[in-house]
Image (tube, rainbow, N blue to C red; front, top):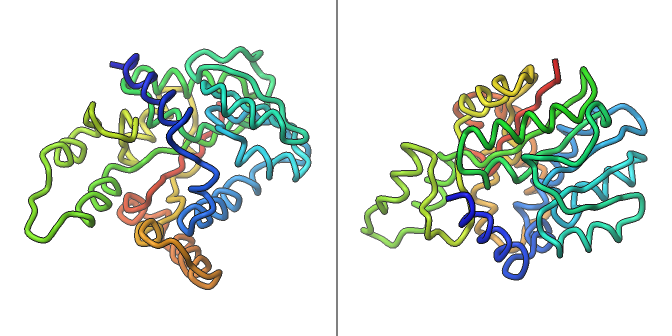
Length: 261
């Protein structure tokens, strides 16, 4: 149930997991670089942006440094405390499904996290509707999900020789539903078709569906060090094929870009 997932989210991000450290690793560096190149060109100068589920402000920081006004909304108190210390960033506690922000008050919204921590389709569509509500007509909503094929590939890569794929991994591939005892508090894993349908149900015009890290992001999950040329090679790959339906499913994260009608 969602209440159990919410409690696990609080425990996981509140005391068990360091998002900043993850983004300093090779796969995280690739993710950060790719998010910037997908998001930045679609923002007007000095935009007002809400970063929903923005964590400790990893994206809010570079957006603020670029001259945008950014508000982080996150359900984890520790995240809000850290994000609030970033110059030019406001931070507040909140729920993606019910934002305490005025309608038409932002130029863009980031939704990186909530969509894979919400169990029901209705909750995910509600979060997308809320993001669309707070942006102005014509404003942009950027939403990130975890593709179920990437979860399958990541899990099977680490199996011992001769081991069979666990039933819960097959269940994720078939339904997108996470195992309730999984350490990572993910609630749902998407296909790109599913993400597009949820965005459209939230009255967002789908502008683009694109892999964030792309296929090169999966092997980088398993290495502690990589030089800049390796990151650049992965970026070259995702730029070339990250918009294609098959390859974009084989990325640790997938981004949907929507425009409020």
